[in-house]
Amino acid sequence: MVIALIFTVLIGYLLGSISFSYIIAKKIKKVDIRQHGSGNAGATNTLRVLGLGPALSVLALDVLKGVIAVWIGAMVAPDETGLFPALAGFAAIIGHNWPVYYGFRGGKGVATTIGVLATLLLLPALYAGVVAIISIILTRYVSLGSILFAILTPIISFIFLDYFAYPVVYAYLALVVALLSIWRHRTNIQRLLARSESKIGQKS
Image (cartoon, rainbow, N blue to C red; front, side):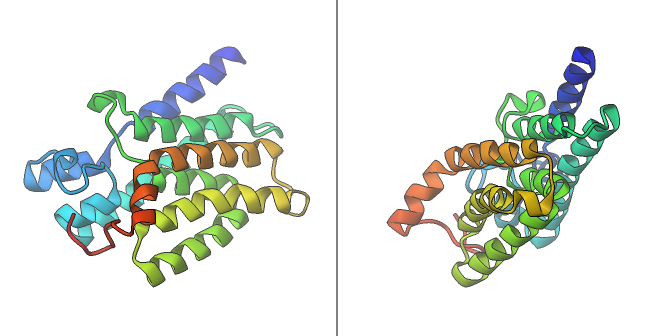
């Protein structure tokens, strides 16, 4: 069991460490995405630096690696506790934020978090995602939508835990991920409060 757990976490982390924004930026413009725009290795900064097409590719691939990490955890230990899928997904998020392949300088894990939470907590993540998307449309602040998604998913999960019938470990994972997301977005929160945050489509 311990070996399987280590294997699951390691695979999730290594998978999450693949930075598609870095790879695509190097392929298209021969640049380090972390040296341009906001300096973040993620889909939003890819949009600023490379445009819509590459940004959508990064978004889809970052979501997918979160989904795959959870699937691997479920295949390794398909039990009712949900511990292995939860840890594999969390490891993928950690890998995206601190990737071993790129000097531990990654993104903020938003897309990978979406992939992980949507796979584990589909309905809570869906409801939180709707609110997040509406906020982005109305305010054009991607960071605000990302923060709202991270915060609302565990809240909805805990409120309707009996109704959704998900393993409780998933809700606790969502809570930990929310705290991590808030910390990773701390400078964005400061800029949002100061009304100096960059809006979608706006150059940094």
